[in-house]
Image 1 (tube, rainbow, N blue to C red):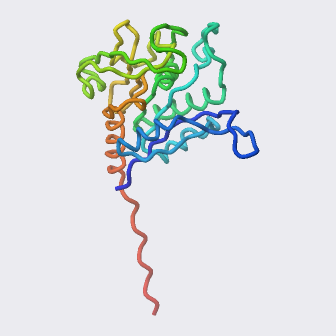
Image 2 (image 1 turned 90 degrees about the vertical axis):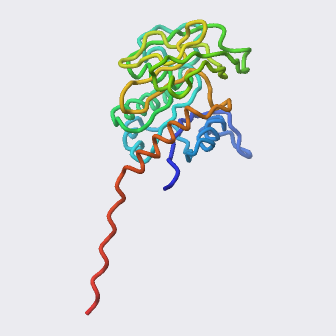
Image 3 (image 1 turned 180 degrees about the vertical axis):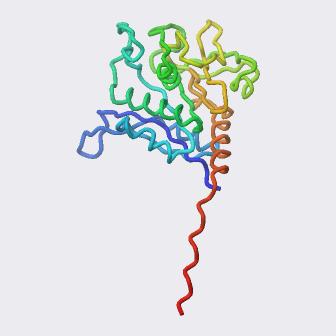
Length: 246
């Protein structure tokens, strides 16, 4: 059985340099694909594309990771821009929101949102965000470690039943939960640290950056779920043997 194919969203970086040319590049930190690979999956990077193609793309994947990154445009959740909110990235916002909505409509593909990805999951389901909080970064560009407490009875609580120290770097957070989402982990200061959709589909968002740590439990669960779903798909019927020539 092939390793499950896990798609990871990327973003365009305009300042990349290749030889004598300055050209945009589709990027994501290497920790994401290494996290998938270490957990038993095959990683494929997904550059921004036409949102109309999101559903078709998902038919070729076994799982989806929506990666972290810059702030989501607050227009997507009906809010005015806080001065501390970063510049919008319309192509990335519309592509990732389309992927999330297509994955939820699909109802089967496992979905993990990491940091911004968790916030995008919340926004895709009609939730809102706090546009600035303090205390979840060590310094600009430096991760902060803090403890998260799981909620008993949730998917995340089953994966990590004890409080865990996690690497984190964010200044925004979930405010109002999106439709159907439940909180599955909290920080000591009351910040929502994980959300999920109860039910058969594996849908989880974490506010921290597991790809920057050594705890593989979340990604291993996604990959195992994706592998089980792949194994359940019937193999295509073999073509009939050609009739003998008389």
